[in-house]
Image (cartoon, rainbow, N blue to C red; front, side, top):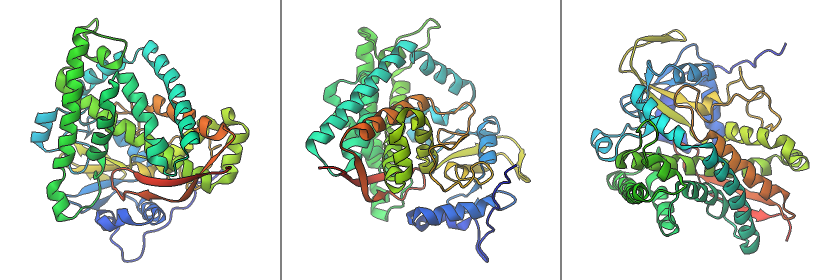
Length: 419
């Protein structure tokens, strides 16, 4: 029997929750943040983080799972991001699926799930392989040296646009709007930037939503075999997405689906470069190890660092009594390094099994709808990157955004192993 690793104790004289409230914490090297989370996991109960109105930090794997699977206690409304979306923003743009609970969330999720027909998913998987091959062909031809723009961001953007049925003429603008909408989420900014933003990001979201609403109107009149048509045309139960619901879903899909996958891909290249033994293992038998490699990349990098919940009913978790109105943050980045679940948690091991990471959420009704497609995208791209005669490697450290919300990479230099 293997005993779980002993948890490190808290640093002497340190307020265990205050460090997470300091913007400098999120600018610190990853190893510093991981050590802080390890100290928090050593405590007997959740700690209070005095950031804004404050929240309770859930940092253990079991605690994050429990909260994720009790949506009637730990509610997603009014918002899962920090800060929560203002009421006027929700009224103007509509509620994203991730910010809904109960029957409203279940109905919207059912409409979306039914739109992902086996035929549509099969076509999407075929397209993923074609897009991945085309991207790598282009990279080998042009020989760029920045990975995020040239490779990692292209695959999920093109795949989602193809699946949704977005006309080619809109795609460059959509890519620009996605970057504007997400570039400062969870990033500490100066006063001038805080006044200018989130206006810039909201304008980007508004333009994207108007764009997709117009396409939705066209598809209602002349449906095709794409996801927008499936979402806006009533199914057998008479349910379909309205213009605002479609816009909110599209914004979620573009910002969450594109950003998270591109960051996981970029961190994946860095991990394979930093661990040549794991890269060699993957190259030697790609099909045998690809699924494990993708899940370990997601666990190790944890693209979404945290989501927020609001307590809706009294509940005791690990000795702490939560009351309605309490704010709770689920720190997936910490849960994915929990010593009681993952032996040697800081190691990158593509053979890790089991690997019950929480990179797609902790289970429950908000488990990521795009988990399967994200895995297929990553596997397809790394197959192309690693099985071509000219390999790639990261050069230097990734330029991280320092966000408290997601493990975002602004840029990563890369080079070819062979001329």
